[in-house]
Image 1: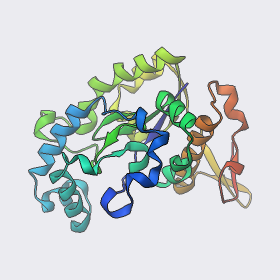
Image 2: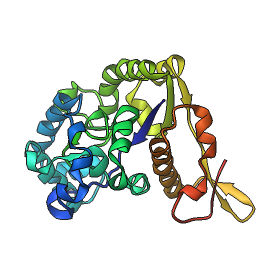
Image 3: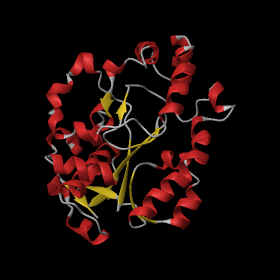
Length: 254
């Protein structure tokens, strides 16, 4: 059973936030690898490094401050000292509840075989792939994409690769991502080729159940952790996951 988790816009910078030594590398260092699509990511980064901060701000629809920070990241993209394993580099809500910093060596081994992270810049990542902090959007078009959006560029490269890896396991995918990232694949082919489990997470508010994005992200991270920590390999094993897996909140998993 394979898991697909969304990347996060919020990322850590090793020089500002922490050092690798804080992450107990003795537990995971032997598993570290370069991303499978490193070449594509490098070309994207080179294209982005040629843009001004004002251009990046317009492309990403973000503030100039955020654009400037990411301009600096693209300019130093090939500095090995700034690389982090993907599972530690992302710092969104899902990753706070994944809590990879508490994984054992056995957890990392299982995660490296079963967890995928989908990324606009890197395509598909395993958790221990070394990546550079970045920001990217799916609608961006770059010289390297030949006029295609980032999302459309990835379709031909990711679809067969992902299907082959899922089938090589047991043909089951637990989809813990958003609809936005389905556009990086030929999703109709994915659905025809593998069995997809896509949990829906609801929060109880008085007498109603609602999907609330912030809590939904937390659930995705917590479920990923549950699968990894408990070595869940069948759909039946998911039925024991519930809101008690989260540190806080009055939430109900339906």
